[in-house]
Length: 308
Image (cartoon, rainbow, N blue to C red):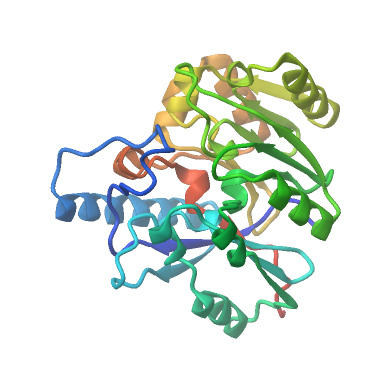
């Protein structure tokens, strides 16, 4: 079993745009000045180029075309509604915004099965939406699969009850904490402030105001990862925490971060990342600014067993 994926799912957007239903809890979103048609055109260009860069690095990318109707402005971020696990489990997550619930497509699971991916169990948590409880996949949870840990900042989109439910299902331990930005707004997803690789972790420690919670997070990270990259609020807003560590088809490490994230890093921080793997650095400014998410949000790792 590997703790890092070499295969990912990405959704090619059909209706990308500014989502008013998520903007209240996502301070990373910026209302665009350009027309919707222009936004969509830019988003497709950015998406296709990112797929190309990943494939050149030896990552298998399963690209699914988004359906044009109904319009789903955030469909490009599938990691929030679905996750794939080593024993063939698939989890479908409860989403806070009603229009993000439209992204859930059983036909995507069927398509992967037709391609030889093995699905043994489907755990659908969508019913919790009726109770106002949400857990938005690997946006809400940063998983340390090697050490069976879930790091999660609690927010409107990340409910403690559901964290416990998922942790119990997979026999993980939860490291839960509270996190805010420099204006004291809650951080909406854990994966914009922290990331985990084989021998390193990235985190915005400034975002954790409670000293006891901060100590627990840092102590746990340092117990398992030799290098710690601490990022500032400004770097967090440039998506330097939204990083994904992958292994390519020859099991060489590939680290994906956006151009804005890379440009925000200090030379010493870049050096650590470069020592840990091959960097893939897509330019996705329109997706980042309009959608309020970056490269990690665009990739749902596939750990499902696959027929030879």
